[in-house]
Amino acid sequence: MADGVYKFIELAGTSDKSWEEAAANAVHTAAKTLEDLRIAEIVELDMQIENGRVRAYRAKVKLSFKYHGEK
Image (cartoon, rainbow, N blue to C red; front, side, top):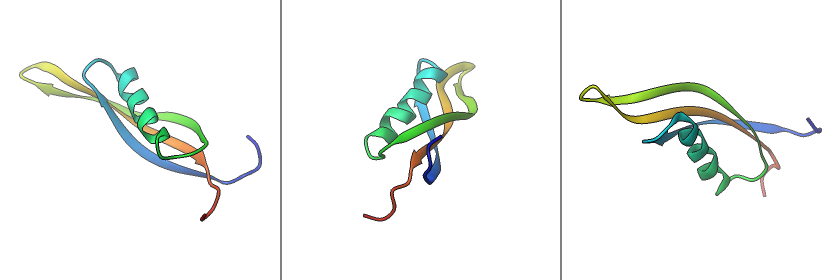
């Protein structure tokens, strides 16, 4: 990893199809407002269940991005 300072945040993405899509949704949404995303780590996976069926997948994702200081 290059010299620099990195900030970490934790997000939860959701999907009605898969955990992979849930994680990707979190990253894609974060990329709209954060610059220089570096690493995404899956912290936890869970599901929402309704009437005995999986209703949604949720992936908690820890993201790091390069911190550039106040602009």
